[in-house]
Amino acid sequence: MAGRKPFSCIVLLSLTFLLTSCATTRLIDTWKDDQFKGPAFKKIMVVSLMKRPDTRQRVEDEFAGQLNAMGVNPVTCYSCIPDLKNLTREEVVRAVGKTNVEGVLIVELRKAETRVESVRTESPTMGEFVGFDSYMLTATSRSYDSAMIKRDEVVTMSTRLFDARTGKLVWYSNTETVDPGKAEREIVSFTKTILKALQKEKLI
Image (cartoon, rainbow, N blue to C red; front, side, top):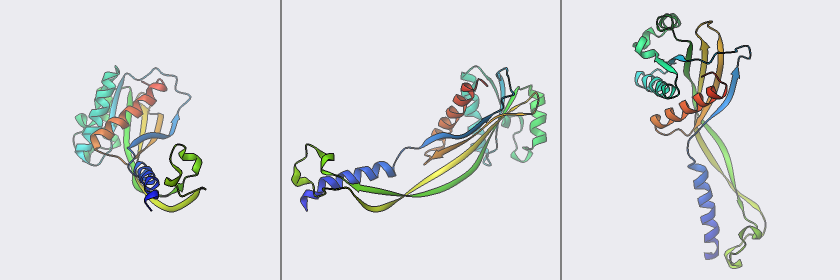
């Protein structure tokens, strides 16, 4: 039985990697109006539709900080409409008119869910461990061990950019963040992902 310990350790390390992977944010869906010819937006209002006031402000502040670093003049919606109860389409349109922004970036949580999938481990072949003494291996062919259950927490966000001058939708995206950690870190990562995509499309 002692000869099986190295293989058991390898399986354990593999499972640990799979089950404790770091959070990632990625674009899963994007669209751009091909009729929009610019110019790039230089003054943007950020509107977070988060239901918690502190999260709403944190998201808008992070976008504002990163936009400002890119040379884009940001306006936070909460500074114009502090009370969430007043956050209506009409009030946003009114705030847009008062601030003379060129674009409106709306960020919204679409869903948060637990995604479950099966993960199978494989017994190794002899050739996969060249250099190990043969007595340490008991498997001579590939075989599947029992399936393990992998659970991921997945947060899906929607981001939409409107041309304030025409009211038309110019760009939108959906993103997924898998196994999010601290809110502060994930908001920074999410914001970078969105603004990098907007830069690539030459919208900012």
